[in-house]
Image 1: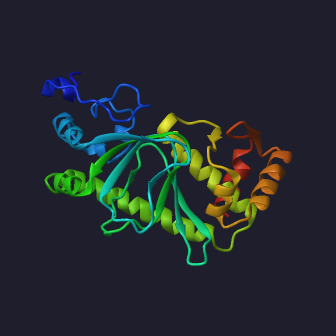
Image 2: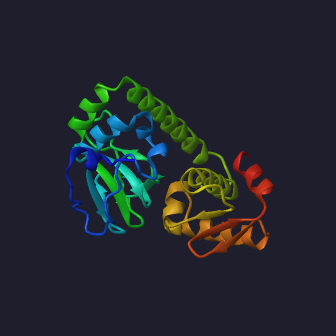
Length: 247
């Protein structure tokens, strides 16, 4: 298949020094996971002409809470930590972005949360005004955006329930089952759930202490519900974990 660059007769250099040779939108490995799936080949070439690749090393910042929301990001590789700083200085992690996720689509003029790279992250960046103008000419893409917005609202509601009256074991199981399902869309179904984020990140997301998260994972491992492996967990007793997740 002819790439967009071949079609334009130009070679667009990537400013990201760690990126491999730039993968065009048509051949992007996460295209079908994101809102870009609504676009045909010609529209993808148009979108690619608007994008600027950028990568971020672990622990570097994509954007900060309350900064002007002037950029839209499509995560193409890696994991991003999303968090809010509360008035008393505490951190509340509100989610983790995986490949295929878009950041900065809110209508607000400023970012409502901060975003840091957990692993090395590669993205496609779009000036927000340019991206919005592109979306305005593509009603089918706008519908796809609405579908994603509805899904994000559902996730936010699930998070409110997760932080409510649930035990630590139920919270951890729910987190693992949700992450398993999200990773399955990216890499395919697996009983091993990657956990590139640290225990403190998980604790801040679940509203628990790091000691409680560690004790809970250790107890579930001792009871053979899961096996702790490097950079993740292997789910051994799926029926039990699923029961805990929906309790």
